[in-house]
Length: 126
Image 1: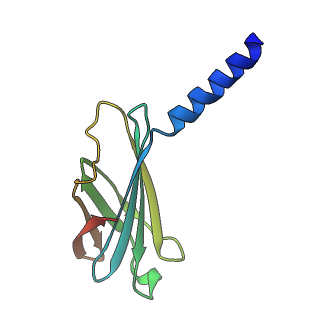
Image 2 (image 1 turned 135 degrees about the vertical axis):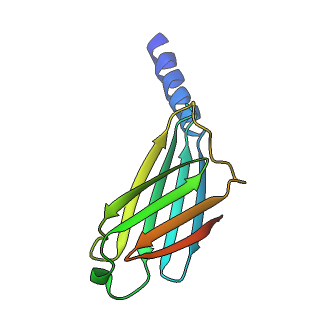
């Protein structure tokens, strides 16, 4: 009997813990690029930001190396990266509990540089 109660309590704790996540999705585009950012915050105050950048043009090979910066509560980015064959680029960033967290009111700005070109655009909460 004690074992059944313990199992039920453990299942309940796992279920309640998994319900405490917040997810925010942001999207935006410029003339040559579109981007999505998905922010997932867990009950232990960790935050994961999954970023996807897409080249809207047809000649992906002509883009060359790309540098980008995602700025919100903190920032992350990469430089000197190449797009995948389908013109996309993905990245992920994790913040620990001491970092500032994204909220539903956070502004997200993306800057992309390639072939001596620069575009900056805002991602809006979806």
